[in-house]
Length: 131
Image 1 (tube, one colour):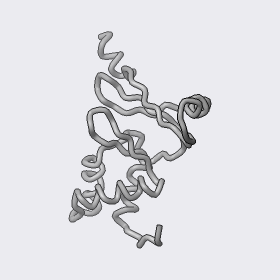
Image 2 (image 1 turned 180 degrees about the horizontal axis):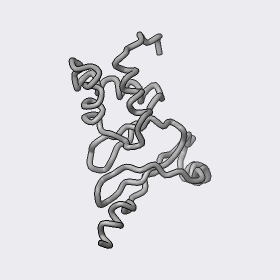
Image 3 (image 1 turned 120 degrees about the vertical axis):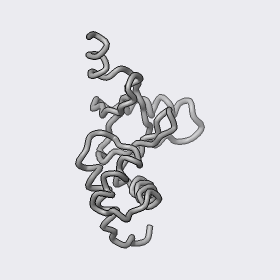
Image 4 (image 1 turned 180 degrees about the vertical axis):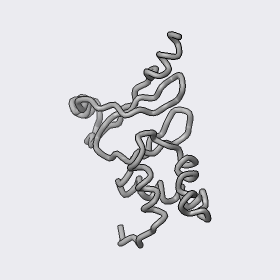
């Protein structure tokens, strides 16, 4: 990729994602970045989020409801989606590297990586159910 011109707006998006563990939507990122850049458009936020994801500087998480979430943590880790409230939560566990080898035995090609999404009920929702 050619050298990319520095953008204060792109840097603000990246900084916001690095400051939160929430896995926000593009709309949420837009609302926060607008505080610093009131004239920024939602389209600019979307373009920069996708660019940062393509560059590997953030992660893009596609959820079953069709909405993308974004994660400033790029170290390998998994995610859990709460089936009650929809929250996306980081899940740090031993990597499932053996699954790549298992999949490659069933595939006429080379497996390079995988993603896994877990579904369950978060602790906050469990507490609400027991009240």
